[in-house]
Length: 261
Image (tube, rainbow, N blue to C red; front, side, top):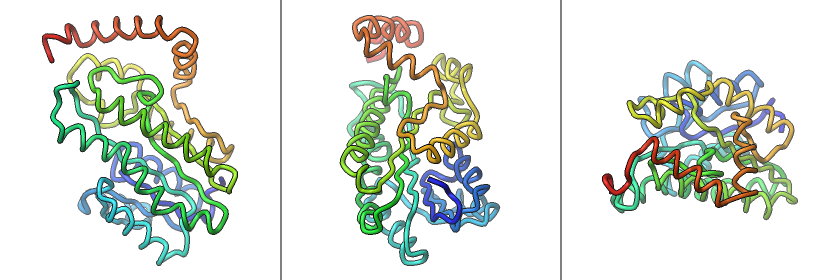
């Protein structure tokens, strides 16, 4: 997909990857960028700087997502690209509260279902459109220290694959962004895992550049960290060895799980 003259919606756009995407998209001369985030105070200044529109939206609430899409359709007549980018992380394993699990799943996965349900009918009617899902390398591999993050990102990847398989021959382009550490607030923590991710982190500008290139080439999988492709192959070729290696990394970073759970 070429982005010139396109109508684009980006969720989680106030900072991090979402803001980086909007800044990069703006260079492609789209017709409109709709920047969405949870709080109006977080999104207005960024949108004004890019001559974009700011719309508040809680992506975990389907009515909010439907309103975001309907408002864009009413104003612009179509949505060419929807970037389901909002995401959160919460540490913890099997004993994390139900409320924490639910919130992470709602933001990281269910919101992708909501946005696809909201925007796909109009795209299918036109016979074209693009859905870009921000997942994570955790969705292809796993996540140390956060069970809910790993599970929700796996769900996001699986959903993006399903949508591509089901609608890819009907004009719907689907892309799935799966970075490792990105230089955002999500890896600012004072802990061994954040330290490791910062060592390998790429900039939001690098991620956004990779996204634009992948959309242009109509690639599904976007890997700002190329080594993730090798890790996927290692996992697939010898799952037992991969699990053993991950247990070693988990122990080195997190210590004895029994002492925490």
